Length: 184
Ligand SMILES: [Zn+2]
Image (cartoon, rainbow, N blue to C red; front, side, top):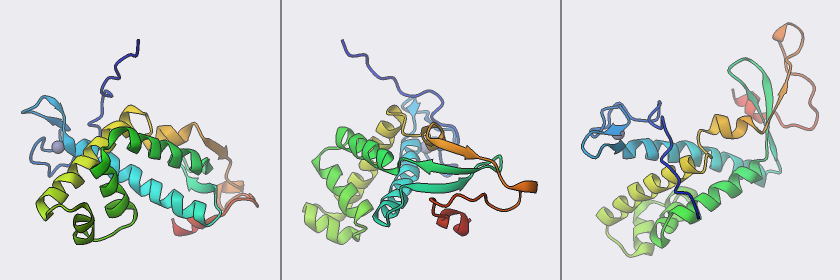
């Protein structure tokens, strides 16, 4: 018998918006007594941003990214393709056909809302309702599937490397691109 997945505890964390009129930044909707929708929309945004970066990296032949951890370690974040696949599967599970189109056209292909609404044959109001719904359902699924929090997801996939003498300069890692570092 399949166990019913529970809503992850502590979802609110820092993911709610202080400006949210439903939860006022608390992350829980007082009216509905559940995790506020703004939390899920935020999770989607964060995961989508990473997804787009990794897709772009893959297209350029990168399968590994350099990051500086909060403790000052240079890390190689690997398995971009695994994250991309996990994200795709979460989207397929969580979204209906309209929402999948919203994700594809509006978020991934970056079309303007008019073009998306035209293709979906819905009006402006219905389109933006679908955008919100897509972000909420996707965010919830990403959290349930433990793709978010991203630090925890990528943490298991990190290779820690020591910084050079005195903590200055990057170590020699010839196979890795350093564009992420250069941008930091
Ligand atoms: Zn909220």
